[in-house]
Image (cartoon, rainbow, N blue to C red; front, side):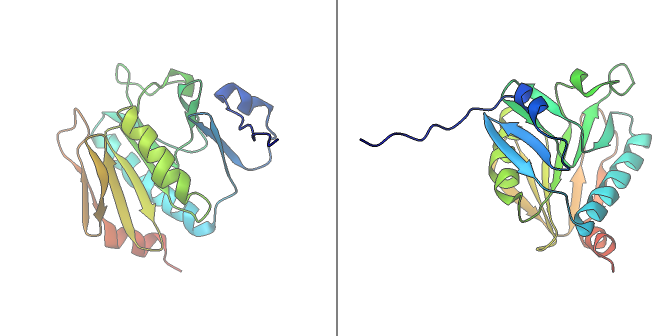
Length: 187
């Protein structure tokens, strides 16, 4: 008789039992995702994207930019740590704790070989289902940004100019994708 293999359904609470070992742990629909320490190129791209978005949000006071680690919990079986994310302001202020965050204006992941499946499938689905208005996947190898919204199952592949106009902003954030990759991958 064949015994079925049981797959554990993880919760956000289970993450507290895991070691503090430099890995990033996330749960999406009960599945555990483990991400090892990122590369230097990854971190450079994350830092540059964060700085550009944070500078934009100084002028357009509609949200606050953060970089991971910072766990955003959408439900007991959905807790993620996007590389870069924007949370809406509450009465003109940023949240004091990530526990206060119930929605995002933008989530962005810089693709790594170990995160491609999680970023392109599980997270894209999650962010679409919870109504995150924009989800970007920064692909360092292809030098493209994949833009996803809740309204289109297919991502838009951006190679030239990326514009983002968050709710409440008067002017859009504009990113020259070619210039971004030239700076992020400069050696």
